[in-house]
Image (cartoon, rainbow, N blue to C red; front, side, top):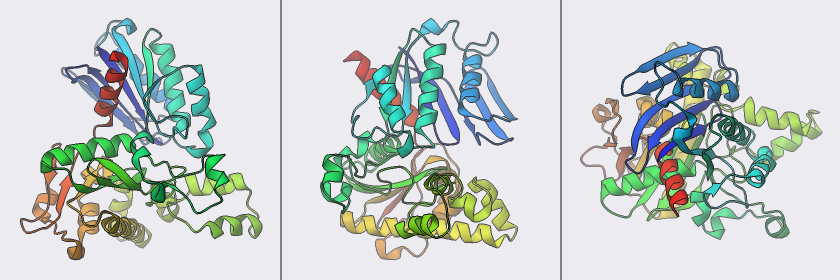
Amino acid sequence: MKIVIINSGSSSIKYQLIDMPSKEVICSGMIDRIGLETSNFSYKTNKDSLEEILPIPNHKIGLEKISQLLLDETVGVIKSTQEIEAVGHRVVHGGASFSDTVLINEEVKEKIKQLFELAPLHNPANLEGIIVAEEVFPSAKQVAVFDTAFHQTMPEVAYRYAIPNYLLTENKIRAYGFHGTSHKYVSEKAMGFLEKSSKIITVHLGNGCSITAVKDGKSIDHSMGFGPMNGLIMGTRSGDIDQSVIFYMVNTLGYQLSEVNTVLQKQSGMLGLTGHSDLRDIQANAEKGDLNCQLALDMNVYRIKKYIGSYAAVLNGIDAVVFTAGIGENSAYIRKSVCENMGFLGIELDEAKNAIRSSEIREINTANSQTKILVVPTNEELEIANQVYDLILN
C-alpha cells in the first residue's frame, strides 16, 4: 500500500511516500522557510536528489510543487495518482472532537475549520493540504492524524485550568497538548533504546517548540495547552505570558483583540526579540556579536530549563532527556546550553559526542551521567503512516 504523508507545519511542509507495511520510503523531502523569498525545497528518491532555493509564499503553492514532482516524467516516482491508496495528514488541533485517527469527510473538514482560531498557524495549513490532496489524489482515502491524540492520557490535574467548571463541561476549555505524533514516536524510540519503561522528558524544538513529561510511554504533562502558543519560546509565538499583558494591550494601549492575537502568534517569540524567526540566522548573528540575538538564545534556553526542572518534579526523577525536531536534532549549541549547570538532575553532557552530527538515535551524555541525554530524530511521517495503515486495515 502506497501512502503519501503530508506534514504541514507553521512554516514548513515535510512529505514522504511510504510503502506499507514494508515501511520503505520511496520518496521524501521538505520545504522550510515558507513565506520567505529564500524557501528551501528538497526532493529525494533512491535515484534522484533535488534541492532548490526559491520563493514559496504559502502552503498551497508548496503542495502543488510536491505533487508535480511526484508525477514528473523524469524524476517522478508514480505514473498515476491511482497508485496512491491513502494520504495521511498531520492535523494539529483535534479539540474535543477527535482523540483518534479518522477518515476524512466533509464533517471532519468542517470541524478542523472550526478549530482554526485555536491553531491559526497550523490548522489552516493542514486543511489546505487536505483540500489539495483531494484534488491531486481523488481516488485515495484521506486520513487525519491529530497532534492532540497522544496527550489524551494527561491526568485531570494536568489538563484542567483553574476556571469555572462549566467552561470545561460546556465549552471543553482544557489543555489538549500538541506535537503529539512526534512526542509519541521519539519517546517510544527512547524506551526501546533504554530497553525499559522510563521517566522521559521529550524536548521538541523547531519553529514550534514543546516539551512533554512521559511516564511508561504515556504523556502526563505538556507545555502547550488549549492552543499551541504557550510554553516554550518559539519562532514567532511568545510561549508563556502573563494574561494581564493581554488586558493591558487592549484596555490601555488600544489594541484590538485580533491585533493582540497576531502579535502573540506571528510577531513574537524569536522573531519579536531579534527580527529573525529561524534559529540558524539568530545563532549566526549572535556569533557576530548581536546582543539581541544572544539574549534571545539565552531566554530560549532558560525557558527550556525551567520546564525540565518542573517535569523532573512531576515525574519524581528522570531517566532520560530527549532532544528532537529540527533544532533539537541539529543545534549542538542549544543542547549544550540547556544541559549546562544541570548536575543536580544528574545531567552531564559529553561535548565531543554532542558535536557529532548523525541521523541515528544517539547518546550524548558522559559515562558518569546519571541521566541519559539522547538525540532521537523524529519521524512523524512514519508514525502517521503506521496509524493510517492500521486504520485502513481495521
